[in-house]
Amino acid sequence: MSESSATAAPRHPDGRFRNVVPRRRQGLREVLSLIWKLSTAKPKTTVPDQALPVRALGTADIEAAPDASLWRLGHSTMLFKLDGRYWLTDPVFSERAAPVQWAGPKRFHAPPIDIEALPRLAGVILSHDHYDHLDHGSIVRLIPKADLFVAPLGVGDRIVGWGVDATRVRQLDWWQSTDVAGLRLTAAPSRHFSGRGLRDGDRTLWASWVIEAAGLRLFFSGDTGYHDDFKTIGERHGPFDVTFLENGAYNTMWPEVHMHPDETLQAHLDLRGRWLVPVHNGTFDLSLHPWYEPFERIRDLARAAGVKLATPMMGERLALAQPHEGGAWWHAAMPETAPPISPGGRASTPSTR
Image (cartoon, rainbow, N blue to C red; front, side):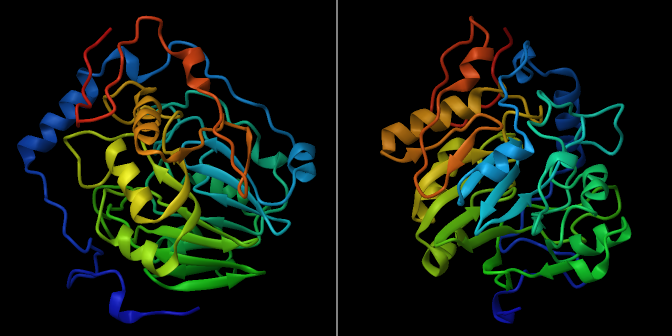
């Protein structure tokens, strides 16, 4: 593992991690207002009123697929086939992204494939410890499936506590790299936060990932607000063949920890990406915008900027060396009375139907 300590993730004196540009702390009134809006003022359009189209995926489909393939399985869960080996990002296969399975954000669709049907995994790549990215039930089921778990600092300790053998865990700070069977992973900065309870805030690190394998350079953002280090990552590791950037669960009430679509596009440009695949959408209700709005806005923004955008359906294979645009599959489940979505601006609290 290589390391540049001069650019390691900053920490407070008590050991808690922080962003390069510290995020503003919300006051009690703001927090209570946010909780009230999320619990009482959600428009109906935050959740689809019919089943989303999903392409069922089987073991034989994956094994027969060419090398350098990608399948979105939901939210930020992606399966990569690189140099004949399989890698999974931020696995969430449970019905809810929550501490319990009887409450909390519920999936819009079932995963295209079950964990038990996945091929043997060379590794699982984790970005941070929030429930919509790190799911206890999925990790436990993946223990017999995965050879290695690669995580930011502290996240690896958490999954060791869940039963993962410590010898199968590698934990990285920002700008550290590790090599696994011809694949190189580099943890890179993001602008977010961490914690799964009331007392463990920012005790573990959050990170984005540079993935280099099969002659390709790929970037996975994890969760992040827009930040200047996108340009640094692009300079150090770009240009990227494909960027997988978060595009969903944004709102003007939390602008520092999630990107709006215009920022997603700018991050892709900063990274010097060739193709953009928007993720962190289409699976969970985590904000106030219509569930389909992120797709509509990033599609229009990309077209206006001349950026190549790929939007594969959940379970649809994407060739990483030669991506295809993919259809607007979400239109099949959009309400007929849906108002047009403006690609620009920061309006993310739409009117109800």
